[in-house]
Length: 100
Length: 206
Image 1 (spheres, rainbow over the protein chains, first blue to last red):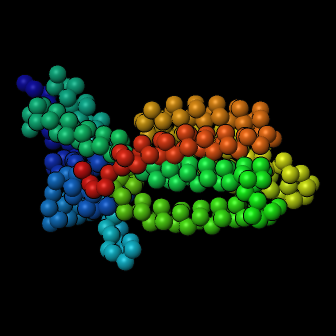
Image 2: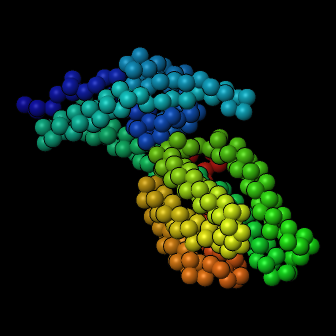
Image 3: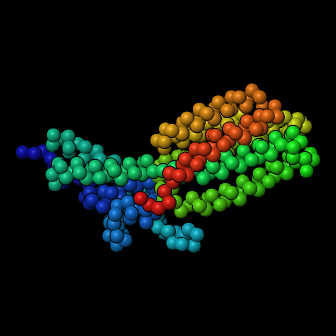
């Protein structure tokens, strides 16, 4: 029997798109919404939905501001989010190691 | 979920994280601007020293450096507005680059103010010549740190070049030709890498 147990993975992070968001924010934070959208190849609505889930979990913070009189939405990776991201990677690493 | 799916997801996450990690630097415009401005000002200062530019008499130095201050202020305002909308502005490398050059700017300002104060207080006309060597040493340190933190190792060559220019300028600081040498140094150490970085800058998100 495989020792691979996927239930140990943080579900908030482990959606394909949310995974991409967290990965990108780990090196670019805050990232403008449009930049993030292009990087993870999502639509406005889809990205907003997934960001809401991450925001509810406290992993990201959304800041709405203006730049040169144009609205600008910035997505910040929170301290809690960075911690969750590191935990997630550690968990994945141990799961993969256990399954080998 | 299988192990293969998980590995595939990890590879995807890694790609995105590395895109941020290796995002192009956005300081090219700044380096090019300061390189060209410094080179122009140093050449004009040398021309005043050699009486080639004698229209303003002894006030020539003040005219050159006041114009330098005005152009520097306007240029920085324009550059900040230009960079603000660039993708990758908050990438880890770009942030490191900004932090390093902000620190370098503060160090340079302290040296400039100290040297000018010495010129005014002691009436020593050679006092500002101390700025050269220190400035190029600071450029070198900033280029080296920015190169290392942003994974743009090629910039380190310019850091070493800057250290070399600094060394020779410390040796010959009070010779008139040192200003011309510093002008060439500014083009090599600041404007050249600035141009390279500018060419690599993303205009849109890729």
